[in-house]
Amino acid sequence: MTDQLITQGSQHTQEELSQLAVTLADIEAAQKLLDGVIARTPVEGSRALGRLIGANVSLKCENLQRAGSFKVRGAYTRMAKLSAAERARGVVAASAGNHAQGVAVAASRLDIKARIYMPVGVALPKLAATRSHGAEVVLFGHNVDEALAEAQRYADETGAVFVHPFDNVDVVAGQGTVGLEILEQVPDVDTILMGVGGGGLLAGVAVAVKARARELGRNIRIIGVQAENAAAYPPSLAADALVPLTKVSTMADGIAVGRPGQLPFSIIKELVDDVITVSEDSLARALIFLLERSKMVVEPAGAVGVAALLDGTLTRDGQLPGNTVVVLSGGNIDPMLMLKVIQRGLAAAGRFLVVRMLLDDRPGSLATISRIIAESDANVTGVDHTRVGGSISMGDVAITINMETKGEEHCEQVLSNLRAEGFQPVVVQG
Image (tube, rainbow, N blue to C red; front, top):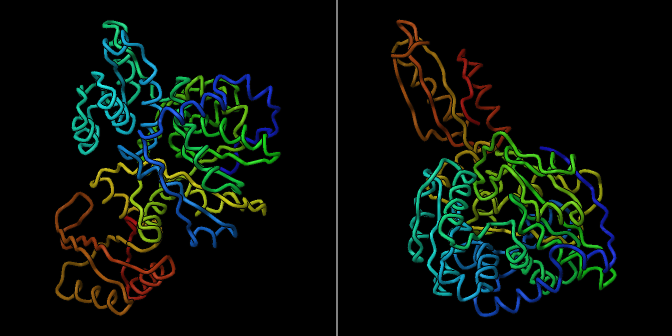
């Protein structure tokens, strides 16, 4: 994990705020436009997270929004402003899931034809959900960047209106309405955390919150969180220019963006206080935490703020973040991915252990191992026993054992007990 990567000045005059590409007035107008269209998502307190950081923590549940994420806010705001001629030409967009569903829902409500490009490997539930809202879906490319390029090409060729997922004034203004709701629901908030990919949500919320805080004579910290394997903002902010990543690899597909948007970047570099990153293991732990402690189904991109709190990033310097709100930005997670994430999260927390051992192929060895594990109070959930393989000698057998454990100390005790009996377990996962 990376500690604080940037620390921007938080005090801006009203004149400076009014000169940004997106203003508080734009976001207030978007809020009126969205009235009756979107859900006013709830804010739920989290005592468990609060105890960890020594302050009140609330969760802004955009995972319960229409279409499962905040994206419908920006998509509808953008599309509702189209002229009759533009609506007649239809819209085109590209997304791995959340923006696609947001555009599809907005298009259905506004009676606009929508064509959406999605990567070939997109999760089936997101593909099915987008189609169910009436949009035409075209599978293209192996990532969102390739799909975006094709969507732009289609727009240039046909005249369809391209609805960008984050690099547009109206989209950013729509996403900023999340910030206005947070201020209404938690008026004494001191710190707001949320995930950042292209930057539309972070930029919009920063404008809304900083402008309102300025009116009240307060300072509210805005912190963006990225997956460390898809963190384009830290190098871009350091260089004061867009620095595209050569590779993006994260389970948080909702924020797996290799290049920040120019418009959001121009706002974020001025208003956002910090950008921090979290590891894949931290993301997996956060999803497990939200399932167990908050009863919330959240996708990895929506859990990055919780991952940062669990890692203790905000309290590492001894400064308490005060009343904190974490935006759970989406809940569209593929069940197959959830299975993998849960297993990874349990392993990262020391609650799932996989070991591999080479043994003499003789009767009783497996029974001895089973006895040791049982006496160590671990629970075996799977066993793979094979005599064939490149690293297995004649007369040997390889055994891989999956087991439920009770934490890191318990894992070490199980391994120690196996070694004490002469076995040499190699940890495969845990």
